[in-house]
Image 1 (cartoon, chains in turn red, brown, green):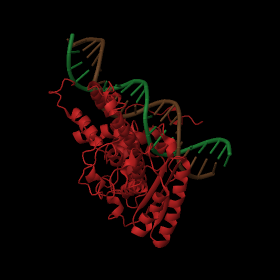
Image 2 (cartoon, rainbow, N blue to C red; image 1 turned 180 degrees about the vertical axis):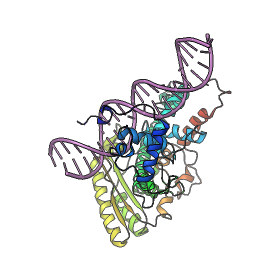
Image 3 (cartoon, chains in turn purple, yellow, red; image 1 turned 30 degrees about the horizontal axis):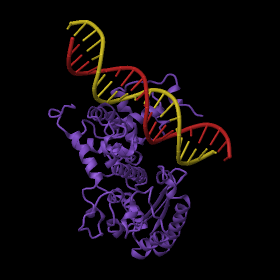
Image 4 (cartoon, rainbow, N blue to C red; image 1 turned 90 degrees about the horizontal axis):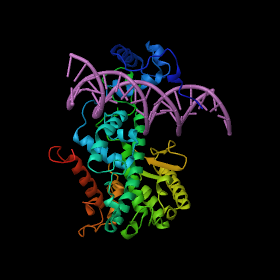
Length: 382
DNA sequence: AATGGCAGCAACCGCCTACAA
DNA sequence: CTTGTAGGCGGTTGCTGCCAT
C-alpha cells in the first residue's frame, strides 16, 4: 500500500544529526510542540523528513530520557521482561523509566544477548541451551507450569504496557518537562509520566487478576494447574463478578479482560472456550452497567486498541487505592506456580503471595539473575 | 604509525495498525 | 467499505571509535 514516502524523498538529509539540527529541532518543539511530524521539518527549517525528526526526538533529544550505562537493576528488568515479552521493546521500555525502546534493543543485542549466550542460556527462550530445564522428566511439569505462567504474565505485562501508554496519552496535566512551556502537552508520550504517580491502570490490572482468581474455584486450588489446561470457569465463578464489583465495594475498580490469543494459546486451549469467554464478558458488561448506575462517578471504558480478537473492558473509579480486591492477589503468575508447589502449610488463604512465597517463578528468575549478576572475574563465562 | 577487526549505537527502512475522509 | 495518511514498532544497516596486531 503506502510505501515509506519519507525516505524516498530526494533532497532530504540523511545520516547523523548535527548539533545545529538538534538545536533547531529542540527550539521548534520547545516553542510549538511537535504537532504533525510531517509538517515539522519545513516549519523548523530542517532538511529532514518528519519521521527522522520524530526518531531523533524520541530516541535522543527528548529531555526525559536517561542516557548512559544501564545499571544492574535495569539489566535485570530487561532480562526478565524480555523472557516474558520477547522482542517487544516498546512494551519493555514502558517498564524502564527514561529508557527508550531503541536503547534497550541495542543494549540487549550488544550486551545482554551475548552475555546470556556465553552463559549457555538461549537468549530467545531464556532456557539453558541443553534444555535440561524442560527435558528431564522431573522438571517437565514445572517447566510446563512455568511456560503457562510466562504466557499469562506476558499478556498481563503487555496489557499493562498498553495501558501505561494510554494513561500517558490521556493524562490531563502532563508533567512539565525540562523544556518547559507548551512542549509538555505535546511530548507527554511514552516515558514522560510523572515517576512518582503510580498509574491507575496498574491497579486495574491488579483488580483484573483478582477477578480472574475469584472466577476459579478458590476452595480447591487443585483446579488451578494452569490457565490453559484445567481452568474451571464455572457459573459460580461468573456469579462472583457482581459480588466483587458491586456488593463488596461499589467503588472498587473492577477489571476484566478476555484475551483469546493468550487464553487459547497452547495445545489445550479448547478447555477455555469462546462461549465461556463471551458469556463472562456479557455478564461483566451487565455488571458494569449496574455499577455505573450505583455510582455516577464511575466511568466505563472500552479499550478499543486491543486487537479484534480481544475483548477488554474495565470499570474505573477514582477510589481504588484501598480496593480490597487488590489484596486478593498480586500477580497472577503466583497462582499458576502455586499448584505445582506445596503451599505453605501456615497459609491462611487470605494473601496468596504470603502463601506461596519462594515460588518456582522466583527460583527460576533468581537463579537466572544470579547467573547474570556473576562477577566477570569470578566466572568463566565472561 | 598504519590498518584491519570488532563492538556499540544512532539512524534507517519496511511493515503494521489506527484513524479519518 | 475503501483508501490514504500518520505514527509506532522491530529488524537491520552503517558509521564511528577503540583495540589488537
